[in-house]
Length: 253
Figure 1 (cartoon, rainbow, N blue to C red):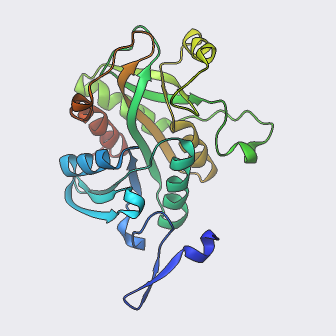
Figure 2 (figure 1 turned 90 degrees about the vertical axis):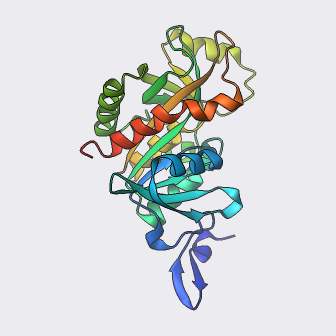
């Protein structure tokens, strides 16, 4: 299917800009977007931290919500698992809805002894084997990194809250069930703080489209110790991460 043929739909006799994967009207999405992988975490975060919340997307069950945080418009949109899924949503959010600031909020696995469960990792850079953008980069080993203004504001917000926080490089993996322990060993050896599956492509897309991006992550399990938060505790442990992301997006609020 040609995406360009699906960018416009006629709703109630009106020509409304839409995309294949985000069924929101043109004005439904804010310039600042938080991106949890889990659509139900998007729902929880929107209902917990935003006011005047309304659901703006439910295509394929990938929920999206728009509301306000301290008077500032914010959209929280689920992005799915893995870089290919996130790439779809971020491309449409930037290209068709005008998103300018995109912050991933999600879980990650700790990879250093000093990184503990429930700690927050703010990702300066993200190492990968490959990304959906590899075809564009060809032989170039592009170094995806966060927007400095967002990173600086997030660190300040975390320090103000007293949240145990680590700032540095992460690893965006292509697979969840990894059968290459040698790769993880090298990540640990080179100081990588944690592993997740989306941030690198987010950073590349933000660079390509001259937008701002950041990943703020909560450590939900640990590759060295085997510890993991029970599912029942994960959501309740993620509040600091969401607040840090919001404060980073609006440091003067």
